[in-house]
Amino acid sequence: MRSILAVLPLLVLSGCASYQGDEVHPVPSDRLLAYQQAGKDSVQVDVTRDEGYLGGGCYVAVTIDHEVAARIGKGESASFQVPAGKHVVGIIGDKDGEGLCSKAMLRRELLVPLEPGGNNAFRIVSDNRTGFDIKPAVE
Image 1: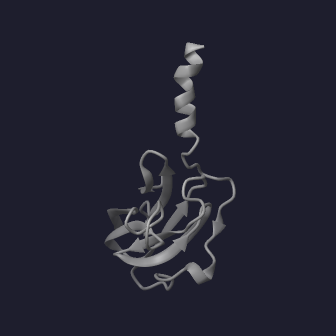
Image 2: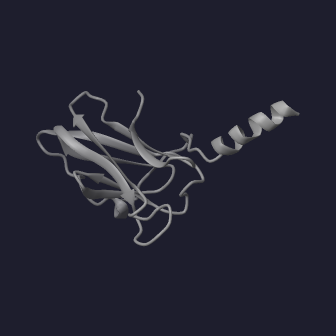
């Protein structure tokens, strides 16, 4: 009985963590807002949002150099054409006001080198303890 009581809180906490789904859908074109045209020095950047219950009813805005590039829902993926070099890739809430998906509650950013042939893929993850985050995808 004590074992069950010790493991139960861990199961409850992990139940709200996001996970990589089997089916990833592309973000519809009306929610792709920037970095869609390839340039002479551009590299492809891929961002995928995990599946999960946390924040499932709202979009997360993907930003590149503080410009909103797309609004992405759970289980969706978007690709961007970004000039090679160091850039700030991040996420912000998609709503004004209050709540988990509000701009005031959600802002995560990474300064990353985007290079041809480099790992230019990122995942948007969520966890009930830390909220949303953006991380480099493991190849």
